[in-house]
Image (cartoon, rainbow, N blue to C red; front, side):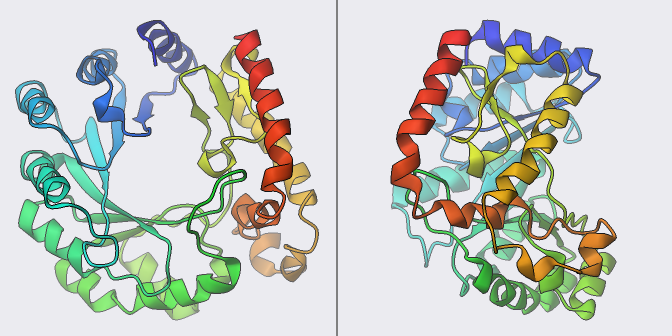
Length: 312
């Protein structure tokens, strides 16, 4: 991301009265102007959320100590995506870097965890929250297939097992007063009334619908959400407001779902969907149709991306 593009995006968001910005990657903290970008956005009265893996160099962490120490935790927020040290081991050097980051930025940081297997554990996250004084909320995401890529992900048939596994940690959540936070991709029908009651009482702001969580890439192309990052991109310069982007991608949702016949058949007549409480699993389940087609779609994706680069 260049300074010119960042300033354009800030102007664009401000004109739409949209006062929050999330910085993602890759790893955003390795950008040479990362600290300057954050300070610039804060100066312009944006609330900034940074998604990071926490593997921050000593030099960059020293900058954080210098420039972020006086920033309110309400205006600057880190989500540190953490891996289970047993199921996904990392080197001692990487682990030490993450611990150093959490030691310094703990009060500004919420732990995040991406679920890619049904036998996951959350115990290490509760330990991190207590040890490093992290915010007492845990962002939980379901990994999804990415068209054209190879990645580990949770299949629709496994979601119920994931929910049961999550609920098995209820006593730890309650004892330590940690609030579970569900990212998109969790369909409401996979939860029992008892499990939904626990989420409500714990203060979890669970949204079981599916709406655009659009991203803007460094080349100024816009896409619906990360799993669909290589599908139906548009240029930011095609829009004049956040509302227009939202309107455009909402209009593309049904055609994408229509390309996935059969996946939502089980949702016909579902009271949650009829009442607008659930989007039938959203686009995330529709992505599973693309898995076998990924090699076929790659030329199409590259062609669309080349048109976006030329237009921008």
